[in-house]
Length: 344
View 1 (cartoon, rainbow, N blue to C red):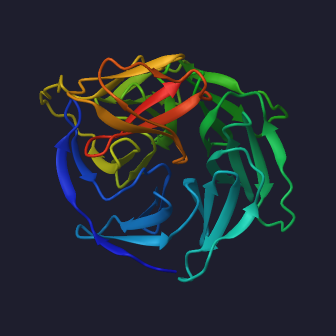
View 2 (spheres, rainbow, N blue to C red):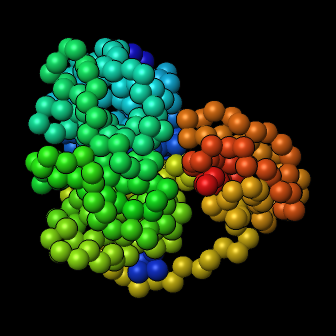
């Protein structure tokens, strides 16, 4: 396995009106899934899985495995790294450098998230609108449906015997008690702005609201869940995790992973009114890109990196999206930020 070492560039930015201090790790390519293992942050990095030692301020970015097929999520069980990509789950032993991934289960429908519970690997199938599980100790990997009463599951986690499910297009988080004989989840909280991923810290559930450009939380100990905004004005937060009381956030649009100090501070952030933006967003029929100053060549891709459309546009161009499947898409513009939109 080829190991590539890249010096990490650190950039200090303020990201919130309550002004959390954020260190932005810029050497990341469309980071979607993140996991912690032995003080190291593993994350999807383009077609690679990379890692960074979080206890070393001058840490180097190291590729763990390369030349994958557009990985979307990871999980680490003991010394094995499980990798979701397009239609399958593969694994490799990260304690033995040089090993290659081997398939665990195939013929999945866009696996978007994984979590481990009582020797079972739970898998969210985004396109199949269901959660399945397989026993990782059994060589015969038969799928068992946990629930199929959900809509576009973008993330799952298990906490206190309950399976929490992010339902992307219905803007809610549901939960299913795994100790009860039921396959129908109940709604925990709704009215979110396209939630992408969740994590739990100190009995609080943190939610990355992708189009809301914010991170929210609820207290899981309360019978009535009241949502509280934690961070606002953060560009397209995708995945979340905590390490040593600091929140790590990946952003597929910004191609970055940020470490955020949640200590409240008072700062004023000026809004850039000339920043490129997609509207309407979400959209059913057409989208446009405002603040383009000239004719601009764009590429539209899905989250797996497949190029769907290429054309030259300006700020008055209406780009048809009615034939696209419902989902999350990227607009790639060379020399500037990648934009994102949601097709309803």
